[in-house]
Each structure stands twice: as structure tokens, then as C-alpha cells.
Image (tube, rainbow, N blue to C red; front, side, top):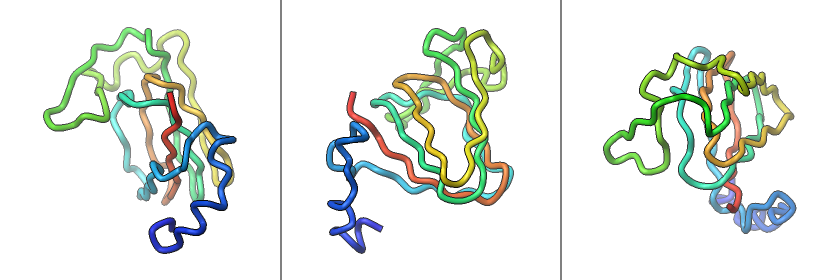
Length: 128
């Protein structure tokens, strides 16, 4: 959207979201059953706006007892060695994000994400 309509980028009040100019946003599209293994992002926090469909999030705080594992050439994420173990550890939360809702993912929180149906969302990296 912002590549084809750069003026739209300036119309969003990114500072109100703690996100600078907003150029660091990503668009995600997924089919039912698609998922991302348990991981945390190495950069700042995230704001996820669900545009269509439904996405399930399992979130765990940074101090959850998961063992980190790096994937070669992947600089933005740290994956859990046993992604399905510990998802119900104390302090975890499960969220079903539906169209029109926004989820704040704090910096370095572990998360496992799965598509409950065809979905699309916009992902915005916040400043630290």
C-alpha cells in the first residue's frame, strides 16, 4: 500500500503508536493451518493489526523456561528449541485476534502464531 501510495504513509499518526515514520511495517498473508513456530523477535515491540480472518497467538513472557535456538542467516528471530513444550507455562496468555483488532506484543515476548482461517494482517515494529 505505502509503496504504491506513499502519501498514505504520511496520513497515519505513527508517533501515536510509538512507531516513528511507519515505514517498517510488514503485510502478512496466511492460509488456514499456516503457523509460525514459537520464537521471539530480536528488535522492538510489535503492533499487529488484523485486517481479515483470524489468527491465534500464544504469548509467553521473556523469562519463560524455553531454550533459545538461532537459525543460520535469520537475524530477526530467536526460536525455541522445543517450540511446543511449555506453551502453557505460568504467565502465558492465549489470544484469538480477529479482523479489526490490534495486538501489542512486548519486546522479546515468546509467541507462537497460527492461522485459524484465511487471514491478512499488518505488522508494525515499534521503537524500543
